[in-house]
Image 1: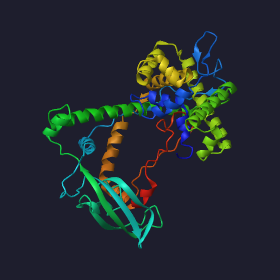
Image 2 (image 1 turned 90 degrees about the horizontal axis):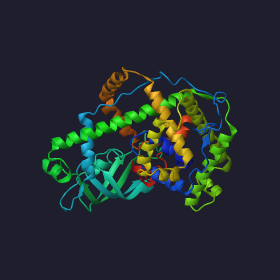
Image 3 (image 1 turned 180 degrees about the horizontal axis):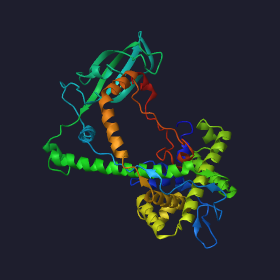
Image 4 (image 1 turned 90 degrees about the vertical axis):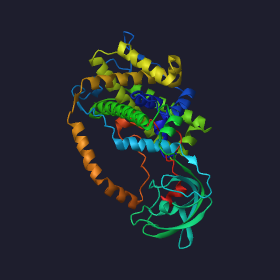
Length: 442
């Protein structure tokens, strides 16, 4: 696991809140739920003198937080248009996922095939670190490896071994290899080939009758994805705009202590999963206990700030967690996360986390409903896409030459707001899935 990567995974209300804002349930929840089922937030809900549930212990938040303007902020609700290129790329991806093993002994690898290979890289006759891998699946023509590597595999047969000479780019990330010539001995274990898109294939493998119908279904799927992405982005921007521009004057001590306790309980749950004591678990992540205590405070302050803002807006606008709109959000969460079982939702995440999520979504809905929308944003985005398209080939060549084909993983908690809502997809496993033994070829 990356150092400190477990921070996001520890907090079940963080994952529930951020995923509750969208229409699709994140796969990462299974990891968070597993820990929270062991030790859900058992702290009791707070209520006011009239019995209404509150997110903070204080009756009025005015002396604790200065809330930024949340009415009339400018947002962009542009939905990205689906292009023919988008459709072609998704179809190609779907076909790639349906690839079948090529058993013809005389067949040779071609672009688009997925080859399972072993390789050993040497420089001046000596194997170098990161240049060896076994049973490595590589889509030929994907540009995953350095220039010359994939091209050298084209035309090979199953069981064939071949030496491929390449030159690492001058800008390659390893200074020991940058600009250097190397030889990779590559053995093809097997390879798969995607099917050709035909009416017959569509009829046999989908619910559609021909390629036109199939492509239209793909268009609809992409349009739905773009709509959901736009809605999630809108919610995130709406909330982060208010959160970032609000300022805490004083943190209610009771709420901070409760949040610290929640954080520690989640850490203990993950430690228990690993059959470790808390201190050993924390240190196994490369984090000292002093740093862990600081992170507890950081999380607690972010959580309390969020709750102060939410409660302040709800108070100002006459909302309660028991009103009709909040109950509708609760029903949505129950269906999305607990298959219609409210008790299961609460057992898994805790009543407090559920309340916090409902409050956050309710306030996001209000901010969005009272926002102004930049009608020129879509035009600007379209113009930017056109300009970007004119330089795509050149940029792609620069990226390939640099040998930087791995996406950088965003670290947890970029700022206070992200500390409360960031990285719901993190789990107790290291998010970096690339094998370090393959870095020398990539």
